Length: 107
Image (cartoon, rainbow, N blue to C red; front, side, top):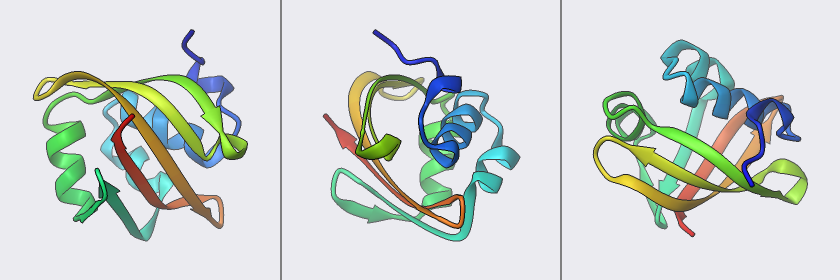
C-alpha cells in the first residue's frame, strides 16, 4: 500500500519527494543543502547531472511503499521514461532541515 506523500514522517524527505514528483526543479533544489551529495547503487554521482537525467529529463516519480529510520529510509516504486518502473530503496541524511545526502539503489 502506497503512503501518501503528505503523510511521510520527515519534513525534509516529504519536501524532497513532493518536489521530485511534481518535477519541480526549484523546489527540489530548495529541499537540499547547497553541497548535497548522493550515490546510486553504491557509486557516488554528481547530484545535478543525476537529477537532470533520472528525474527532470525523464519525468521521475516515486510511490512510497514503506518508511524506516524515522522516515529517513524509504522503499518506493520509482519510475521514469528512461528505465520504466523499479523497486528502489532510499536513505536520506538531513542537516538543518534539508537533505544533505541521499543514497538510492534497487531494493
